[in-house]
Amino acid sequence: MKPISFGLRLLAPWVVIFFLASVPEVLAKDKDDVQSVYGATHPSTFALYALDPDLIAGWNTLLRDYEKKFIAKKYHNLPVLGGWYGEGFTPDYEMLLASKLSKVLYLDNDYHDKMEISKNFKKLGLKVIKIPGGLLETPESFREMGKAFNRKERGEALAAYAEEALAKVKAVVSKLNKSQKPTIYFGQEADGLSTVCRNSPRSLTLELAGSLNVHNCLSGMKNSVLHITFEQLLAYDPDIILIDNPKLAANIPRHPLWSHLRAVQAGQVYLVPRGPFSWLERPATYMRLIGLQWLTGILHPNIYPIDIKAETKKFMRLFFQLEMTNEDVEELLTR
Image (cartoon, rainbow, N blue to C red; front, side, top):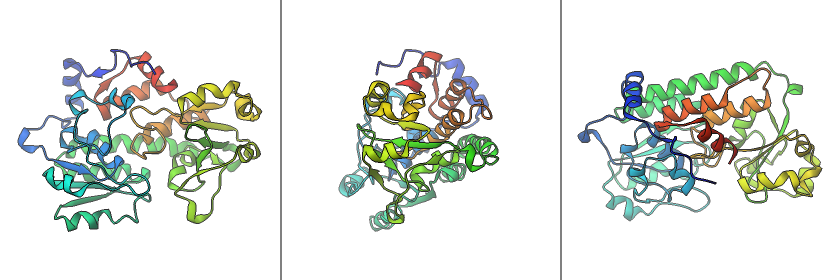
């Protein structure tokens, strides 16, 4: 993917003045107020970045090159402190203690509910701020974070956007009956044959947008990302296909196997935007707010006619303090 053009940059001074006027408390804090906070998971750390990047003690893993395009350069080389992400991954406790952390933020969700994250940190004598972290709880999450880190007005601005986005989609989708909801398949990884389970936290964005996930799983596997065979995918033959791998998405239209699927024949295959983090899942962050609107517009264009380019600009300005051109947004949506 080519570097995003110079149009995507930290806001120019006159834009900053306007933005500060619109959101009274953004990131302008006295140095004495800056705290060294550790996000226990990727969603926790990324939420801290939206609230105030100066709070972050370090990243959970190295930033990818495409992520760096959306993150201010001064934060690219923060320490890598590890975290809870995927099976068996935990942070280096000695490194955490050496980092002189003031607090730990943990956005609680169904992925990590059995990991006893809070208990582990309390043993180290670190104060853990545990806040609900589900998609539907995003407004509450940002309000609670704003209170916890003395960023109330900033937290309220982010929460208000989340509330509005969720309400707009709900107002449309709640009127649909089952026959009006297209079937959908979310293909992940390089071959597109890993996917998420229907009625699981990982599939929530798909269902909130008004679609029916074709892949059902046993109850004990609901939170997993599972691999299927291509024969299973052919049997599902969904109306819509989502793909999270840019190379695969580009090759599918001329792929000898994928071309047998109705969605491919109808041109209903979509690359899930991933800048700076996935818009739908893995990691499950507040990017799902814009992802939910993007997907609802694809699924139901007649009743949810969103200008996704304008909405993306608005979202990135609020959550990342970035000003994007039309070309920047086009690249984000297609590559």
